[in-house]
Amino acid sequence: MTDEPLLEVENLRVRFETSRGVTEAVRGVSFQVGRERVGIVGESGSGKSMTGRSILRLIRPPGVATADRLMFSGIDLQALSERRMRAMRGRRIAMVMQDPKYSLNPVMRIGSQLVEALKVHERISKSKARERALQMLADVQIRDPERVLSAYPHELSGGMGQRVMIAMMLIPSPDLLIADEPTSALDVTVQLEVLRILDGLVKDRGMGLIFISHDLRLVSTFCDRVLVMYLGKIVEEIDASRLQDAEHPYTRGLLECLPAIGGSHEPLKVLKRDEAWA
Amino acid sequence: MSGPQSAGNAKIAVSDLSVTFTQGRRPVRAVKGVSFSVKPLESFGLVGESGSGKSTVLRAICGLAPVSGGEIRIDGAAMAEPRDKAFARRVQMVFQDPYGSLHPRHTIDRVLSEPLAIHRFSDREDRIVQALKDVGLDARFRFRLPHQLSGGQRQRVAIARALIVEPEILLLDEPTSALDASIQAEVLNLLTRLREERNLTFVMVSHDLAVIDHMCERLLVMRGGEAVEALERSALADHAVSSDYTRTLLTASEGYVR
Ligand SMILES: Nc1ncnc2c1ncn2[C@@H]1O[C@H](COP(=O)(O)OP(=O)(O)OP(=O)(O)O)[C@@H](O)[C@H]1O
Ligand SMILES: Nc1ncnc2c1ncn2[C@@H]1O[C@H](COP(=O)(O)OP(=O)(O)OP(=O)(O)O)[C@@H](O)[C@H]1O
Ligand SMILES: [Mg+2]
Ligand SMILES: [Mg+2]
Image (cartoon, rainbow over all chains, first blue to last red; front, side):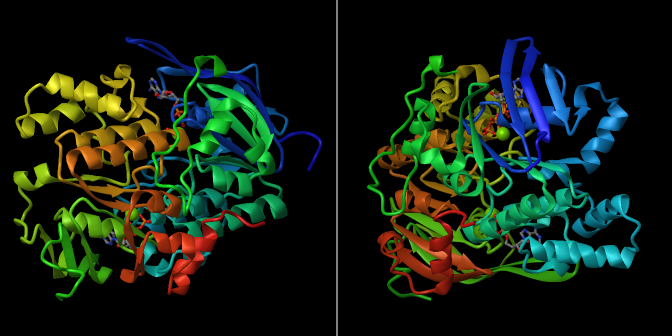
């Protein structure tokens, strides 16, 4: 790990002003990411996706994001022109969106999309690009890569679409990858293979990874550190391996709600929420 | 095709089902001769590899997939082709993709009131308020558009829409995979309670074996369009499974090993 963090976020806020009043989706979040795996967990609607999107300056109006500091490897992201920010997004910071349909063009075959993305980043012949695309699909455990190349997004299963997106986001070899629920549609065996790829990129290439997930078991075994969000704030930061010993009542509550194989089949514990937590 | 599994009193009987899509000109055999039956009031799980045909089986039950062989019966009877309004009243599906399944320009209120209008329910107002409450969504979400909700909030709207017409059979495709643990617990408890109160039968797809063990009495493991094995829920805890694939799934459920 290097001394300077890859990403520094200080006092990030996201608010939506609508005719029905103001929603504060993110309320003063600060954290740093090095060349490591940082997990973000937290309640549905707690601002995880908005936090990820803010780093890429992808909050759509009427949403507004502000931060005291938003630095990425020495670059002030807030000061970049929209044009330079776009280049940053394409090359150095990538995000796998929670909505699989968002990043794929519905009327273009998977193969053409991958080949196009490859050609933006490298001088590569069409046939070489196709070969690479096949290999990338095989890497994310797609069983029938030839067929998937010629498929349209709607012809894929949920988990297949998700893996195509991950492959696509890894093309530019980003320094920072923000993955928003990247494996939520994958069966457990494929999930582990995909995580192994991400893990390799962190270890071998020094990529930074922000891994947004609600899967506590996965986050605790895969990540280095975990940020726990509740109502737009980070309420706890803990070593992933120590997640079982978390102290914040929200984090504890989350762990207790999980069903288990061989469990009792009684109603699951539910969380008694407390506004004062955030 | 008959046998103890497809006995006459099944709520849902799927026998030797095959589904073949055409992609360009090439056939894609997504489901290859799958059979299972679900008893009345039972909750039945489908698990298996990504792309193995789980969603396709649910869609075939709803008449939304090109069935190329076999048959599907509900309460012993074949179903109308295409599926009619009466079918939609009895069988509802919660789709895997909560983004794609909600109309982007319809408010949540409209998403919930349309099925009530189609099926001529009275006291719609009360039902909408109650449906939102059931899935733990604050009333302030009622007049929002889907893109103004988080992923998990949208998923709960999709569940509320399926429940609001009081179906007999609920087909649930990864209903909680977009939800955090606390909302997942609430939604699963809600589903369990409603199943008892309203005498529902469930077929549920999930890649989370703990969720399947919690919710389902029996399950079918699928891979590559085929049924690998059918199991009682207790087999998961006891590792009493016969296929290597199921064993791999169970091991992988324990988490990532560095
Ligand atoms: N366009 C919008 N207008 C108003 N509020 C919005 C808008 N978009 C999002 N929000 C709200 O912002 C909050 C944070 O949303 P975000 O998508 O970051 O949640 P999340 O933590 O990613 O949740 P999930 O786990 O369900 O995906 C939510 O409560 C959501 O309702
Ligand atoms: N409209 C379509 N045209 C062509 N092939 C399709 C179509 N829909 C699905 N398929 C193919 O059928 C197979 C089964 O897909 P299905 O969505 O049923 O898988 P699944 O088990 O639900 O997977 P996941 O867990 O990833 O959601 C996949 O190979 C998929 O590519
Ligand atoms: Mg989100
Ligand atoms: Mg599916």
